[in-house]
Length: 409
Ligand SMILES: [Zn+2]
Image (tube, rainbow, N blue to C red; front, side, top):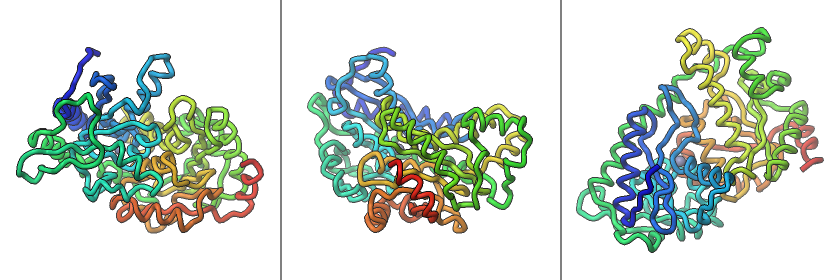
């Protein structure tokens, strides 16, 4: 891409706004962003890609998250990029919990245009970051900038948070650009969230274990994860039979530079569909949960994209929205940035109220924090996660499963 340089916050936010418009045209969340080096050179700009071709493509494909993975991928190819503390991400919308966690995990700086009262890390507009675990708040205060919006309309604000990096000469955003960032997001938000809720209710779902071995859905599952459909438990009650699958993925997670985490997806019938490690050596934000939720969404996307309406309908019957199944984490969340990113990515995966019949959708085997501390982290999350989705990780009930993983942890 042509090298562009921007030394005014306003010019950078205008690029983010143009990306947000492109996102709206694609039919996804109207959010865009860019990454700048320490001189104001634009390294990359892109937009949200949660929805492609009218289908959920990747619930984690927010602008900031993609920019960070792009950064690590370029570094892995040998490109000489500045350290994260010299990089500034400019985003049209306040980072959600997933993106805030990813930014903090990497140590990047961020300049934010529009607020997001539902899912933004600065949802209360105070720049106090009480939505973050206490140990991450000071870092956010030092690296998250909310430049002043001049004027007297409802978009006006005083500057908040960190001062944007010194290469920025102009440090304010114009009212019309800020309004554009807000309005493009607002124009798309409800429509995209609706896409997460067109999936069939649990009682309409069909059991993929009843399909013949050569069926396209079974083949796609096995291609993604060869052990798919080889384990089954009472719905939502993983037992010791899941341990070998988690242990194998935990070992691979360590080989890939992680701390031995793994995440399994069980469907609402109790079938094992996927169990994946992270790829932390490739990118400090490719955790086991990020890899797993993305793989499951893309499996559905690949089967549905370009398929006939009847085929799409069949995929929806056999591969339900994960909210009706169970995510089983080998390790429970801690108070760090990667765990916070995972909690946010979990919210971005569910995107609506968890079914009342499935209160233990998010389970973990080995606790990292005492249950009360974990509950306090969840209770402090922005309103979308706390009041609408009601994220509540719980430990698996089966002591034998806990015992089987304790041996290797
Ligand atoms: Zn985000």
